[in-house]
Length: 259
Length: 303
Figure 1 (cartoon, one colour):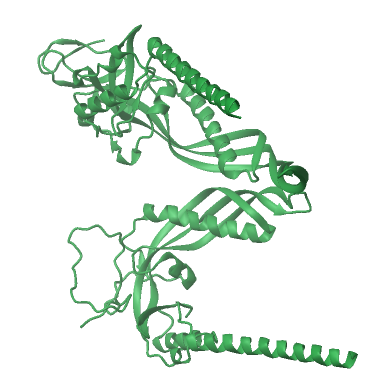
Figure 2 (cartoon, chains in turn green, orange; figure 1 turned 90 degrees about the vertical axis):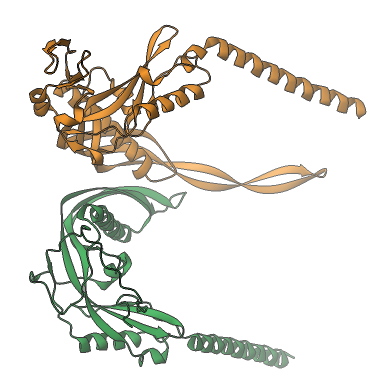
């Protein structure tokens, strides 16, 4: 029985795309530069990246499949007008400040299908848009584009605004921040971006893993080992108990010496 | 201006500024295509039918219970006319500079004495204080499809009350879209429209600064200077149902948005109804005061 590339669920019925339904045509597709073994190595490195991940995750069998996922890549100039409160030695502990930031945003990606969520695509990082291929790939599965240019434009604008606002907040150490924006020269191109999608089973859960087909960056929500957490809690409790005991003993000893 | 009907040949009087109407003798649509094509870019078709508009109008009038009864009982479907009115839809960018005084709250702990169970006790409470700071900065925003009335017959305030219209439903101008419906050519000069647009965008920018940009807990003394740049402008015909309702001092005009069904119109108020309302309020107030005073007297007697 075939399984879904994106979530690993068994596919019982394949539903054909209704004829005549409009799907925007991508400008091109970006070829993979990370091969399957490098993607697998990236997953192994990810599995070992935190002591809280279960040890058997490193040995988990994950089949990573290559998929071309449609995404709108937006670029443009943003004028961010901001005002907020910064910490200060005043009665209220705050003081109002305002400013303007003009910056150019490149490759702000917005998913054009339900295969990837916005947070996943953002976390996957950048793709090299240098050489999009025009000839349709025969051996690569791809998702159809569902979102139009105009539908993703406002998403891209708010992503740019959020990125710039985050920078302003961090730079000025603002407590609160309000913004208004103007975007100029906003251009979007629809591309199929290379992503490895893997599904691995941990306990009774199917977990999804994504690998950027250009950088090898891994995105996924790995499970936390309950045993490791329990052991850590016990270890901390034992340390605290030991410290209390030592302090108690020192107190009794001190009292005896004083007598 | 008299025009010959192309169907029956009758001479039809077409009001000035109107480019589409129907022949009163044979009901054939009459459209001055050349005049319209050079002046109109798009048309938003009617969504609300005449029957729906009449129902909405009746509901609106019925809900206006302070209006004279003679006004509330009218609004039959025959009294509604479909009109396509010209508006200028503008995409514009505003850049403003502002200065304001920003209030940031802080809380002072105050000690006070009070009497509890016959004893004097010391308590503390939090008292809100506000410190004020001057702030100046810039604001920028792009506005899409801001509408300005291009019809002399529709004052800007009335046009604003009719909005919003979904211009995403606008179709490129085609004489067939206006056939059989009274449709007007723009009658407000471009200069006048520019002035109205600049004023309205300045107001919108100032409101946006006050509501969404200024930090702190409160603000005052806001001064805004705005420059607006028009990026795209098009003339759009928008659907309106117009009802002439007989009022106590002459006919009243009530409008129904032909796309959303929003009903707009200043209705007169019945002075008899207002007087009756005041009398009832006074009687209720008098009854409440009497009751409170009576209860107080009874309690005093019991003590």
